[in-house]
Length: 77
Image 1: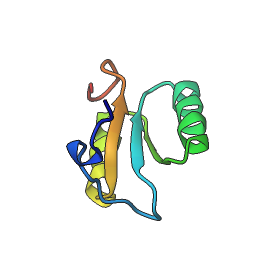
Image 2: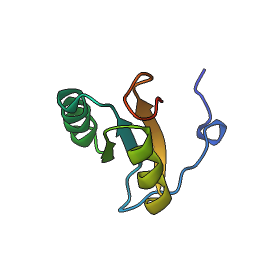
Image 3: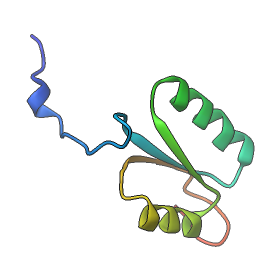
């Protein structure tokens, strides 16, 4: 049985594609996730900790999803 697309929320998109905020204190992890998501057609924003993530969200209102590490310096996820 097919799933109706109306069952899923419609997200505002910038440049015609959804955006994901990747938050992780390990740069190689952020880089890898950004590369995979970008190849999949997503716009990617990156942040090194919770504080950077909050700043990114304050200045980039078109974030549709967040991938984050739960244990980071300064401010956890």
